[in-house]
Length: 307
Image 1 (tube, rainbow, N blue to C red):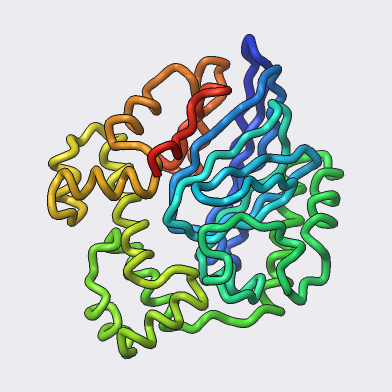
Image 2: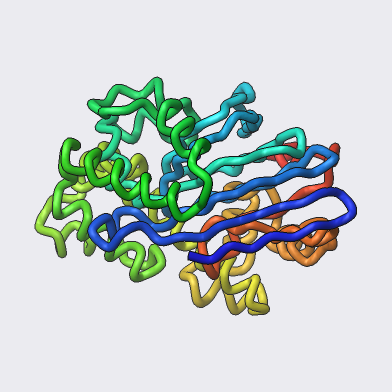
């Protein structure tokens, strides 16, 4: 486990990173605990990633804005894989634990057909499930513990019980998802279906049920995720487009704008700006080694103005 903290002109922050117990992997990807105590509101752009998210909030709410949807204000939340961006806003003080998990593991834990939750952020306590403790109740228990290590240990215990009680995902869905991730979304859907021994139509139906997106949409997310990573590492747009399987640079730019709310140039410039590090706090990318998020200036213009 790794804990980082700091103080700046605008307040203080603490972030704790942990890995779920090996028995929960690869379904559960990571734990990230956070305590933010800033004097001013904060806004953060979240781009689509190939993972589902559960946030156990410790009291203060976050306001989630998505293009074409009314804002949601939640303390704890669940979000599956999406093809659209979101902006999270809070008053400056926020605490909780963010858990990233594979989409098929989210299906096992919560049992809800994942396509019903596509491009949405919901209160996880409203999802039908057979859990032995509610999410808000668990969030309270986590907040009451004195250490991040103790909190992550409790999550290991609870997720082990939830996984055992849930409906297992189809092995072929897990295999197909793993192959999409391995190839960065580059494998054609007909070939993917052939490799797992299903028709393309059946693969589509099972993906929508247990992943939330069809295989083609999931491939778009994973392809763009790889493109963001390459751009953040300093690769040019034309080279990135070729490496990630886009037709050309214009195709990359169009997909980028649709799925993140900004162009590749705007995204790269925003990540290089001083906003994420002005108070010493990290940019808080959601996946290690990935370019997933941008801390925005408070009160700035909406990234959804042209989406």
